[in-house]
Length: 409
Ligand code: MLT
Image (cartoon, rainbow, N blue to C red; front, side, top):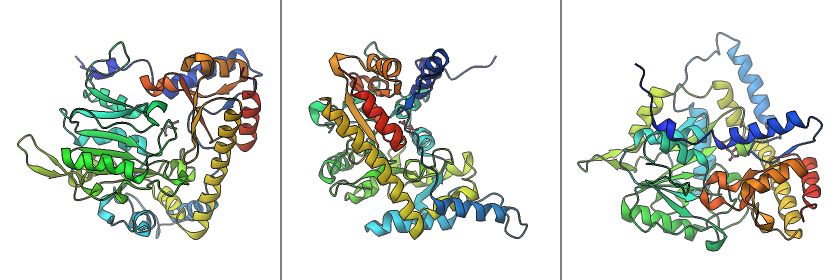
């Protein structure tokens, strides 16, 4: 008899974005002429930087030639990419991260989901709420989450509300927790923490021997001075934090897949007997056993993002999306709606009008204005009464969406 991982049966319905895609397809089937503007899932629309395209063409030619062909590469990533990451994303900011602390992968979704492989089952896990659903769902799959209550909260997960009432700065947990997921700039609220605010978390982790899983996938959108680009800008973070970074939103790799995770060598976890074990070693073991590396062609494309032309092209794309974010933010604010985020982030977090629930507002936008957003409650109980819009559409669609949103009464 085949026994299943019964934790999967505890998961409600399907993954948030699959649910939304299904609703939109049903609407489209019933209304084939509707001109739907998709500002739901955070998927990019601009093509890859030209520097990456050129690098991929060159790499394809190398793969066609016996002298330059590559088979399996190092699971952790080729030196050319790892060194470019270390130099540009860390050394250039005065941060001392070394090549053997960087693990190139196919995405931060995979890495934030898989990191639980090296962590014990009895850890108490805290998430900010609302939150990127992958953190919660993967903890459910691994049996860390307990049972789902009628309040839509998992019994073993500690929820740290992040709402307009606390300016989207969650309070420290009241009881000791072992693992804390932080995502800044935040998905879904688009808000950030300053260096001082992030330091509070790093200090908490140091004092409580906790681990921070810091998802920094939206780092490239930071425009304000005081917002840290890396958690390692905070003193002591290299002994308490793993950082996840991605080329997806930075350089349009959502379909191309390339990301990396930094696991500092100073970081340790403990056996039940209290023996310290290097998390870098454990992640290296996991990565080399379960993953065979990102394709050479893709790693060349990622490396090209750090060339002078690549950097400029990436910057131009980010600025394009940030301009969309400004158009949405300002357009909705003029309507009298409460909007958050969109300054250091491609996400705009909108308070629903007229006391609508998140799903009511989602349905209203889809059916009446043919705009797809993401209902805030899909990101957790404290997202109820909000909706997320993304700035990753085209400028034309963004402007058209804001025009349509003027119809909200
Ligand atoms: C989102 O819309 O939250 C993101 O696209 C999800 C992801 O990056 O996996």
